[in-house]
Image (tube, rainbow, N blue to C red; front, top):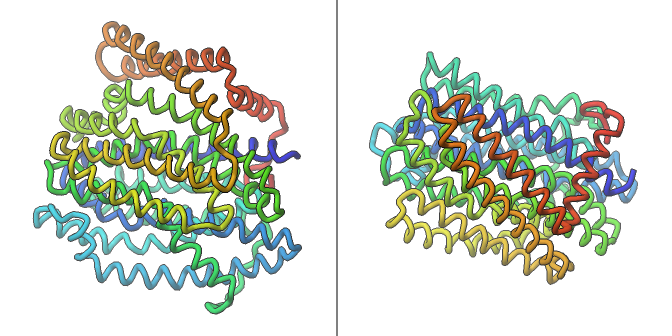
Length: 524
């Protein structure tokens, strides 16, 4: 099977699993919104979940990212058995580190909440501290889940690792709707911990079938263990840009009106849908290929792989961000406005979503551009850029908050993400020719097609809002029609403008439909 076919197949597998996870993720947020609304209890839970969420979305991904190129190096040298032994060493070191970190975090819970929720009233502060202590042990399992995912991805196994997030969301939904009835927000916290456990354990059977045999061995001085840890720490910071932005927002929003943090969280979850569905799938699928191309000294092929990845991300995220911007209010109303989530909460969330959508392409491009540096085992450059843009983010958010309240924080995130994208693209292009004239021509075509789509969707939604009144089924049908029309217009405009990657994506889909079904969790 060719490299293009492997990447295409892996992309579609991860996209399907990520789509399932995102649907369940929206179900999770809907369940939390229904049970708890945009209240102080929700604010306390979200602040308490900050550290575990960082390990889920950042530290776990950092481990997955680091282990792939190292594993590829061993395989390229014909040392597969030594690679499996290294996996046991790293697993054991990771368990020791995360257990110590969780215990330290539990002791420091009052300080953590004091920083992240410094504007909380006393009752909300105390609740957040209790929830933080309760949920911190989940970082052990989130970290293991990320490591297992990286090992499986390095062996071209993508299905089960991508399904792990779906399993976690199922458990959290159970915690919100079932345990939440009896134990309040503590039931939701129990679901979050149980979800982390499920995410790690579900990968073990497939990991064993891939060839992994666990050994109870410890060697913290092993050079490769040191290498992994030294790469993980800066990489964690480099991958945490979105979470760091969100933490800054929560610190500033804790002194605003009740529910401001919750509104930012719900809007952020919606904007992450295309990120997780499209960009995570693409970056996960191409990363083992990029690492292999670097390990085998094929930089020209790596540059071509990155260029194609960049074009696909642009083609998917620019129209997605445009559609979210136009349909923000009906989307929030459909997904969240029920139970404790009232019209005020909808208005607050839609306002934040408006400004988050402006920076969607920046947030997504940072993910794919960073993979270029990580494949070359350069973690310093993305970290330096992240730290530099963090200063910009804080200044913009503080300034814009005065005029736009919590929505100004979302706008600050978008502007900073776009700046981050530009800087990373420039620095990466100095090493590999990823920004060619063809890339910019493609970008212009995507923007033109998205503009045609925006006009069509806005016109159609204005008309449909007048005839499909009310919520529920009518609102759902209205949004589906808007999305369908927007997709048709964008594809037609894209074909007329000869967007080459649009043709490639269609061929990938047809290839998958025509190929034989591959066993779930087996080698690709």
